Image (cartoon, rainbow, N blue to C red; front, top):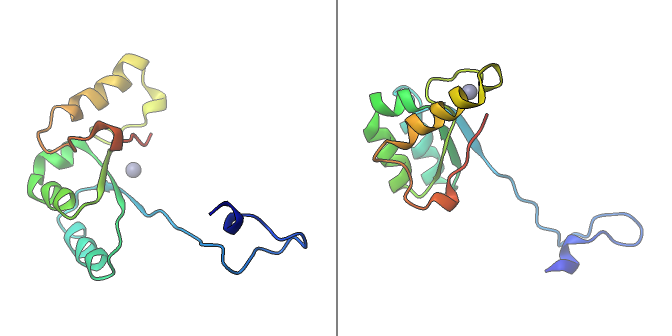
Length: 116
Ligand SMILES: [Zn+2]
């Protein structure tokens, strides 16, 4: 409710205000860490967003499918972790387009994001 998100006249935050944290993880999928991380998130009933590298998705598609099956959001973090700001616009777009080809990308494109 809007009232819960406003500050009291004194400037103190009302006790009822709900604080939220968004968890994001970059550079996966990683064969040493991602599945352990997924188990920890599941135990705590926490959802996160995973910004994945296209080249790593090709190596570990089963981990990507598990991220998706567990209900987390998946975003693109370039194909091979290049610094997109050092590329031409076209080359930067190719990094994302190349990743778009993967079958495991989330079907709901509204939930897709890109992290530069
Ligand atoms: Zn990164």
